[in-house]
Length: 167
Image (tube, rainbow, N blue to C red; front, side):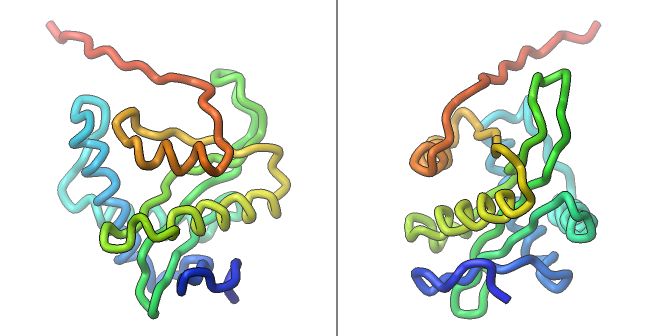
């Protein structure tokens, strides 16, 4: 059953085990993009796609996780992943939905798929009863920041990193 009606020939649905290899490849491409933007902050490892597929497969079993796929013409063209997280005293963050990944295949970017996936993720979190959704967007990922801003997200925290020399 689709979570959202078809829009722009795109259907969003819950991810299934059979989707994991494709989701793993998409997730690895997202990790590689982050690594290109800041290789000191973001790691990549050999067979990153397998690690992503394993992790998302594990998350499919969790009631706290939301893993959605976007399909066009029977092919997965993106996915969104998030989790319901409890109050976190370190971050001074109350219970919320955390949007972890949202990625769209390069060949269909700019066609509204990211917005459709993002709206479906927000709807899934709303159904889970969370009071807000937060996310992190890489500083250099201006396209994602524009999308999230148009969806109503506001900046709240700036992560900063400093490399410490080892002796």
